[in-house]
Every structure is written in structure tokens, then in C-alpha cells.
Length: 141
Image 1 (spheres, rainbow, N blue to C red):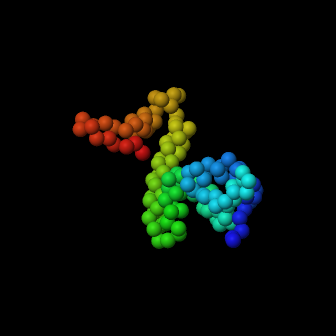
Image 2: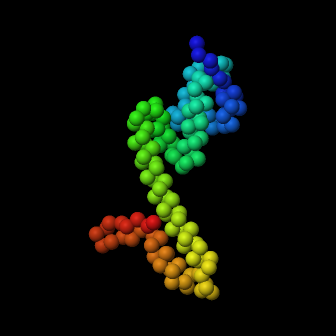
């Protein structure tokens, strides 16, 4: 029988509280394989899974994206999940760079009131989705 770790040991080694481990189990991210009394037991490999989860959460992956990534078992299909997230992250980077540039301008703007600044007002114009007469939307950056 492979070695099992109880929930307290997994919490200690992973740095995640037991409540987080139970949450990830409910969300089908990890799975306990046994119980010793009321304490869940996990295979040692759960620590690798939790490390992947921590890395992905730090990169902004949703639980659904993490589930999809883990479901590949590391086979080539993981690349499709990773490419989609990479593209999403790059779009977010472009958006955040634009916002940071607009903030830089607003912080150095000579207008006495930033709401009177033409550049800031132009940025506001693009901040909301535009609804055309056809009902189509242009998403804001």
C-alpha cells in the first residue's frame, strides 16, 4: 500500500490550511483516498498537485482552468490549456500596460482637474463597451 499523508501533514507540508484542502477536494482538484477516523488521507503525490495549483493560482488560473490542466495528466493536451491561458495573460498585460500609461499621463497632467484633461476624457470614452445600433458590442481595452 502506498504511503498516505493525513490532512494535517499535507497542510503542514503545503502551507495550505485544511479548509483549503477540503475546498480543493470539493472542487475536484485533489482527492483523498482513505480516512483514518475522521481525518482524510492523501497520496504523497498530492503535494505535487498542490504545487501545480499554487503556481497556477499565482498566475491567475481559475479553478476550471486548473481542473482542465490537471485532467490532462501532463499529456500533450496540457499545451492547449497553457496556450489559451498564455494568450489571456498577454491580453491582460497589454490592458494593464495601457491603464498604467494612462495613469502616468493623469499623474503628470497639467490640467487643474484630471476630469477636464482631454487625454483622460478620451481614455474614459474607451473604458466602457460601445453598443452599436446593430446591438453588437466593442469591448473596452
